[in-house]
Amino acid sequence: MGTTPFDLDALEVESDTAEPFHFTWGGQAFTMPLLTQMEWQEQTAFIRTDDPVDSVRLLLGDQFDAFTAAGRLTVARLNALLGAWQEFQGVGLGESGASASS
Image 1 (cartoon, helix red, strand yellow):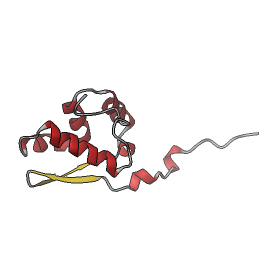
Image 2: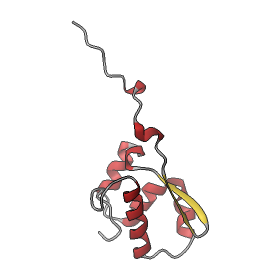
Image 3: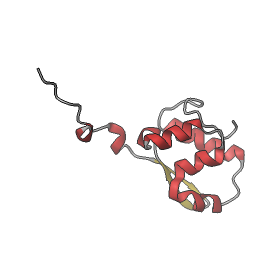
Image 4: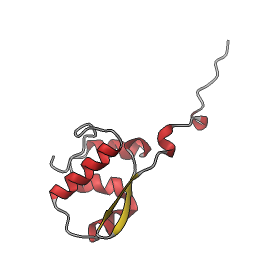
């Protein structure tokens, strides 16, 4: 009695086609992926870090330098950004493990 192996290549996941989070800062457009769109290694690093700079770097990837150059970012604005990103994908504050105030 043989079993059919689970075919991960054929799997279609809703988050694969979900729209990422879009925002503007300093007159520039940026995007951040949903938690479920991140590669598992990046998501694990994001969840484990207590460093807000590392959190934002993981979320923005190649956009990080442009983001940091776009203007002076206060902790209050960063918290608002991360809160809006979490709310956009239905993740409550504290559930992701990353917080700018930790």
